[in-house]
Picture 1: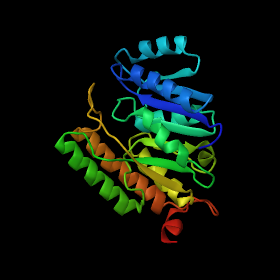
Picture 2 (picture 1 turned 45 degrees about the vertical axis):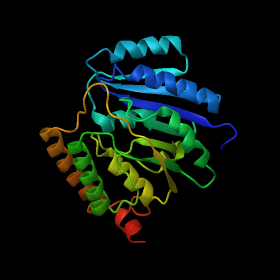
Picture 3 (picture 1 turned 90 degrees about the horizontal axis):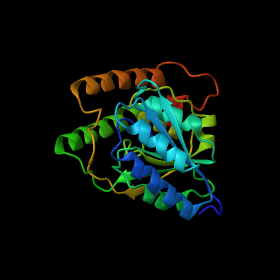
Picture 4 (picture 1 turned 90 degrees about the vertical axis):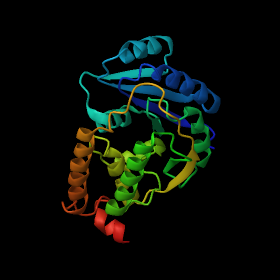
Length: 250
């Protein structure tokens, strides 16, 4: 484990009033155990419930907490890009604000972030979702790995610890949930070293997912198609680590 880890933790949040306060407090307690150089950021992505008020109250009580408000919903990808851009520390950790992952398991990821390792990604020990969501999630993961040539076993496990320096080379554009495919593919194509760790996944106890509707699924198919064309057809600049096809064939 780094002797003095410098960590930014951020959460994208949309209508997560029932879970985000406990996520922030758990993150603070966890970070205080493992480092004295940290910050907690919450990207409030245009929430329409009490998320905004609760976050402002937390920020007023804890100086380590910062809140970034999107006036309008920018999408999951937009929230992640904001969180990454706002992170100031050497390491960036993020997970969703719906409490389906346990922030305390960050302590399992950090010891693996040694010299030569650029990213530590969780993978779900088992998925605690309704059966239809598990089937859709598995299908999405397999298709993403097949069509994009991704090696990571669990593309939609949003429990990631990364070096901020990754984003000096990797530029993200997606505003939707397809940002995870874009991010992992570009990180792999650049040759960064990724380790994987099993983490627990919990049933969603508050609110509902925004992604499992016919409209959202159709939009996801369109976004993935556009992303595939961008990565594999549109030419990248010479010498760029984002020359995806060449890297995938190496």
